[in-house]
Image (cartoon, rainbow, N blue to C red; front, side):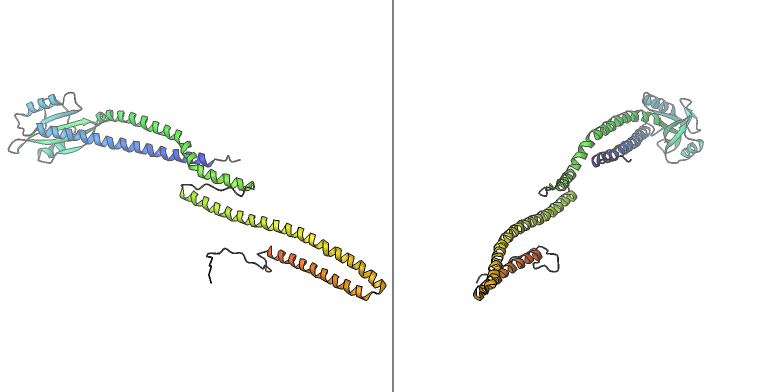
Length: 330
């Protein structure tokens, strides 16, 4: 047997199932965008630092430039290596992150190179440019970099904050979803209670219009239908009451002519035995008058029966609403 699911619980489930992926997607996008922002910010800082310290530079100033960079970058996430025109590191034995072809291209006057490089399983963002003296001659190369793990450290703090925030939002969604579902189902429950009242015979019950357009329209339509049913029931009750009163009056009215006819038949029988022509004529006239009265009562009953069937072919009255009532004065 399939277990039924209430509409309120279904709305609560739909609300939570729609909020959870949305919050997770927002957190994922924030994480990606913030990571991109941190990498771009670190790269811009590195570029500004190298351009500021490395221009202009001569072959004689390369050792002092290497020492200056080492001093300036100590304790930071950045590192920089100066290479002379032959490709040898100055002031240290750092392994270059860019390949020999790229170094050769820079020594040949190529524009600065910026890309991500993998070394020993670690991802680095690298920025390298040629070192020129005041005349524009290339005397060496400077290669700066920072590990992506430095950015990941900051991202871990953001990740913890996102997990806490999204978790709190999901918990709040779990707590609020039944309340939101109850508020959404309240107009529908009003309609259900109205229909149940009608099922119990309370045709005066009416649905409360809702602020939700569809449910409000449904409530108005249901109320209009109930008004028509109530009007029909009122007409039927008035007709039934009038019919009972008429039948009672007709029954009472039939007793008198029937009694008169009974007495008249006894008088007629006696007059026939005595051969009293005047009495016979008078009695027959009286019986005909009573018979005419009974005929009129029967005709009225037939007329009422035909009026009580407005949909039959023999209907005498056609009931329809009037759109406008005209009144003329003379």
